[in-house]
Length: 292
Ligand code: ZN
Ligand code: FE
Image (cartoon, rainbow, N blue to C red; front, top):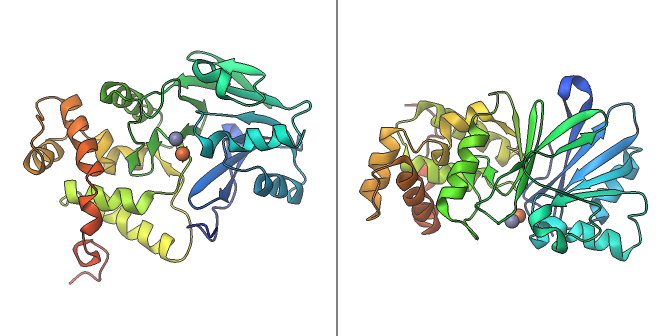
């Protein structure tokens, strides 16, 4: 299957240089994160639909699989576990997954939930329960990066499969309060679709126009727009901007849902995106042409 990303991001350092984060595109738009303990030769892998491409990547970089971190139990996130179990490759590997869905995490050795801490090569990863997409969903927070699965996406957020909207809204609001330079390491490359929708909601947002130009340039060359930073998300992601009056006005005008509180605006925004109408927005309406 051809991936939407041809050229992944270059690996980058977080946690004061103790961890190197690599991105491995798998399937069509999944992004598997490999967290290398610098100078340890070992790595933790966050989610994934498949094991093969990740094992190949680890081998090519001289890394040994130390840990699997799962955010939630959709197939494109725990497929890697199932394959590692089937191939008998989990001997001595730590498998960390959401306690509320522990039975559905193949090979799990440690069930975690809100407030737990996972040691990653000497760095403390904080476990946050970030529900809304799926019950029990967790995110892993280290200094400089958050591995947030299908909760916060670059320019958007995950579907509310389990919901309710209030849970996703709380999860996103909490993630939005992370330090602005935190890298948003989500599990899919959906940035263009998300920003196309964002533009239908906030066409007067100069930071959004600028982001769209940068993302379109990167993506048209086959590059990846993930990770972004929390700063960029706060400035341009409509799902983090329910308290902005322009967002509230645009969403109220486009939908029949009430928009009388930040939660109501968020709920209406998510419903509006689910209609898929933004997909019809022609490229000529996006701020990507030459300025005239
Ligand atoms: Zn999912
Ligand atoms: Fe997913």
